[in-house]
Length: 548
Image 1: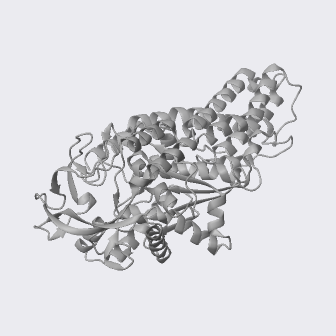
Image 2: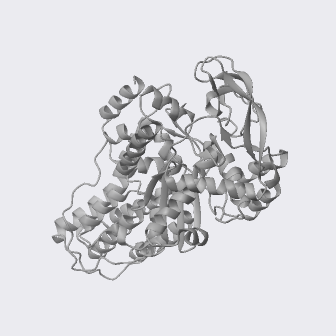
């Protein structure tokens, strides 16, 4: 672990609201990781931006009688507001349409040209006579030539994750008509020439997921194809010397990771480029954009002589389904983040999504009934119960004042050892990005102290009562710190009820394993941290959701 880090997430497309599927695989894991790194004295910055360019935005802005600039400005603000409500704490949220990113994209292109990695070629492209326009990328759908999945985009098969050289059975995604082929001239990036260098980089980077590396290396072995990096539309970054064309979104958008981070750091008086190259670089993504982040992105950085270093970590997770069905905004089968947070606290969703989300490409499923059960039985029945009984008993029996412990028996010694070992046990899992396992470990710690409290029976006021209370309150303090990256608001509530000064966010990670609530310390006001989700409430949510 370096003492510097830049964390990014796949950029949200500025063309609609953020839903639960977006946050599950990328933004929430990135946020949890950033908070953890900062608690370990890492100078870490979480950087993001709205992805502003492309045909969908141009067409939708026309429909709404807005300029593309007005349209993306609306979604940039709305997305940031929704993320903030979910306690996603970006250090800087910018936009790919920023002047800084436009200039950087053109700079990278010119350097790639200078280094001999770009060529110009006349191609045949799909054209819709009905709509009178060339049909780039997601405006042509058809059958994937590799896995034969139907209804896939021409620039990405969501089934197998590959980028088709040419889609089969094409149709116009705007009107459904059969497109014709017309000549046009585009610029290409020589991706094929980077096969050996990419394979070597993947081989040597031990931080990348082995299963992802393996099939990306298989793609390389089976042969890469050069990459068409320009489009015949008006909304995008203009190509230097050929302003009638713009860059393909996947050429410019990931460069905003760099341009946004550099702007933010430079504005803080830090040398942004030097910081980037001396930091751990994390790109959190979903499995549908592996091809871009494991091939296109590193190849472009190699093509500019690694002026900006390649990523150290690309945590990749699966897709979220809802009630075991694929999320589809067009079919209205999704839950908007804003709507969800109108009914339940952000920490309930953060807890659930981390709990069900392994560090793998396996898909995960949001289920209303399972959500309610996990919140009620685990978050409330286990963790909330420990907080209430340890602090509540101390308030009632000792007037909120921590007693001096008696001599420790074997159970007490084991309990103290649990506290002393928690920080290091969690650190191993957090550094490996097994966030679900780390949260589970916190819950196991809470279960242990619930059982410890039950075994010691302090309500009988027998020998060892003082020690039980002393250690149980300190265990609650440990939980408050350990829980902060996952449930920031709830951890602060627990911290305040313990009556400790400052905030949890100011604490160092290693303080999890300190016995720091001393005898005579006075607790704050004790109230339940969480509220139960009623069965009738979930029934209403399900009915409303399924009739949307």
